[in-house]
Image (cartoon, rainbow, N blue to C red; front, side, top):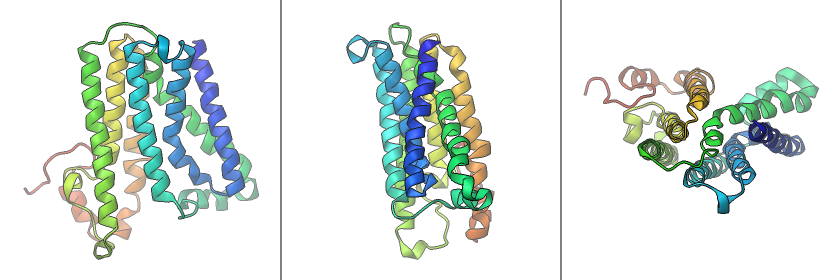
Length: 258
């Protein structure tokens, strides 16, 4: 339990530092690219508390490597995508609604809240590192599922960047590549990544950490992922309603009508 509490402090401290930077920049949306790095910090904090890389089990090194790769990719991509665009409209609206006290309120409702979410979602990463048992079939299954998820995220993001980079696609809907089979390949990829990490944790006996991927799945499907993005996108892209009718919202499948 001490390790988990220490990790919660690490996550909170990390996000407080990011909050201080956001206050100086007047840009709360820097929390978005930093989100993935909070998981990396938690993974490494666990590893160091258990003696560091030299004393770590193969499973511990595996999950830390997987989370580090995932977190760095996400941070680099979102940082590059958001560079020079100013504060995201979500935080602009929140800043306007709350007023002058936003700088203080944002510490709790944005940064520390996300620190808590990251801590809960990463429970499999923390739990998988404690028992030094041999790797088994579930670990392999988790690695494969994680790989599928990372591929969906990476390829989906690349396809979207290329699509948006073509002026001829302005106001059009991307329905090619992975986006032909799911409206949100990046979110589906996240889903696979965290269920893959859970399989590794379950292999170590930390089956109870299932709350982590369950929470991530809920966020992706109902809160900050699919539901939030699709709330207004149909108004901005005329062909989106037809795309919705033929394309799966989340889990990939052939388009209707094929």
